[in-house]
Amino acid sequence: MEDYAIEYGAKRPLKFSEYVVDSLATEELLDEIVYFVGREVNVDTYRKMDVVKTCRLIERLAIMVCKAESPTKLYGITKAQVRHAILQALEIFGGGQPPWGRTSA
Image (cartoon, rainbow, N blue to C red):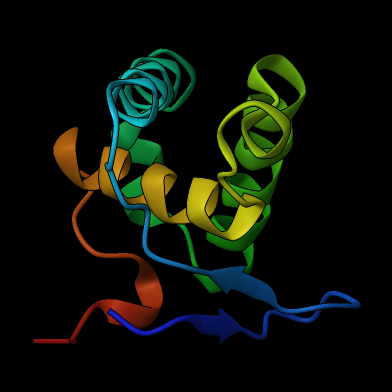
């Protein structure tokens, strides 16, 4: 997966980078992120969100994870990678693809 950014009307676009599990520590951090997202997000509400609301939610969750876990300092995991992990977690809980990845039927 290539790095990508989503423009959603904020000062800076949201950047996403693939979260790579290359050690037990990064796997445990991913588990924490998945658990956190499952606890914090109502998936039914997430599915109804447009691009702007989804990006704001992902950024808020990323800030909360980074404050709680210090992934860059402790594991070398960037905020862009945390955002990608959050998207993966949302898919795990049945949220499906983000709005910019959804196709209309």
